[in-house]
Length: 383
Length: 237
Image (spheres, rainbow over the protein chains, first blue to last red):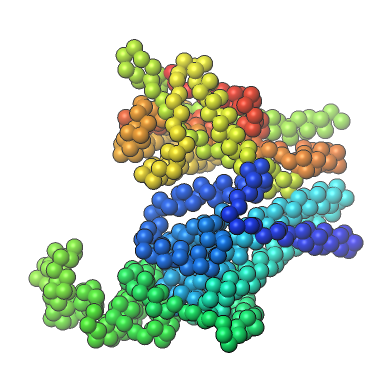
């Protein structure tokens, strides 16, 4: 059994080594006869559907802005990358083998500035240029082939346990292979980030964000991200060191804070609402606390923060919700819905006069509210 | 020895049976048409994926095969329909990219999944009301009208198909398995497809045929005719 195990290990190592493909040149599609063209064709079809998907975020100004950042990072690959924004909470982005770059709105909400966005795009660009999807599929295919042959010989020689041993090794090896790809994409992205004139320390900061959200007990996408990516601690360390070695005193370190905030501002309320609707209060509260510490509290964030408490409805949550709405009322641009939510909480607490007062103010601030009939019924006591 | 042989036959029987599996459900034997003219049937751009099956069983989608198959199958379906006295008008490939029709494609794919599961699927998933002569699925009036406006036809014929082909490595593994273990345990390529005919006046799926077999080849023009004929067998006239 032991020589057989060594043989298997050797075969797996050999198959793993064969995985590096030469980088894809700019403005190139694989030849139609190439195996890689198959994954492109499948991705082309998905991209077509994506553009018309119900959760596609088709805002020309926002898409143009993100596409612009992508082009700046991509350089000569600019024409190969097509940005698709998705209205989806959570912290993730993905690159299809054909250059379709999918970015969730939840990611835009979490990033601090343009440099961090450029860092994410640089990383995803690394997956594209280094043809990671195809390499990963080929790697898995080779392993499966070797596994099938070893399984056959094992069964023929009366050692069926070989297959089980092999399956475990294959899973571990595939995970390791994926992590190697992530490291390669990190290095590639960091280089592009610096070359485009952005502050290279933004890359490590993105992983600080992921780590912070995971530590806050988030059972959301941050977890799934961590399952396929190297441990953030190691990764941040490496990115930080690499950024320090790139940066000289005369290196430009653009952050693009003002531009990023300005373009995100009209969408922020909607993206915050998406997070609230996930109904994952623990991680959402951690996220909102982080956003408030970083960017300062504003009316829109305070309102949504209160909504998390109101919808969670734990013992003390009604009081917490009212206290948080009160903070929102301290700003001139308080969303009208804040008054409605105050009314709902007071109503649930049996504070009829307070509720009526808040509902009145809601209709005052939002005279064209679509739920006017219901709110009027609350005020009259008919409901 | 005879016992072994009988056992082998028993073991092989499902493989043989599965290799020629095709099943139809249709609600009417005859299509409606304007007096004195043939029914107008639009052939939707077929949704195909041809892939190579590696020794270990992973599927590598092949672009060149898939694109050739789209051409081969479209022509073969038209010829097979003509033999049954029906004219198919192929809709342009660009229809698949039409943003206004994306909800219709998505809806139809949902119907296909339902039909595959509850009419042609495992026995435990089949619904008693979905039998040989009744399908009872519909795209709905709105989707049917949207499609009808684009293709100007009474019926739309949809074909979805995945087709895998054993690589030389898989074929070698199959031979080696028979030699070493004595049983054909390694499955070759499979052709799995669903054809549906939708009445564009009502949205109703009036006919569906399912193929799941280990034969058929769409990579070349000539053998594609056999698949087309197998798909359109029992198509109402």
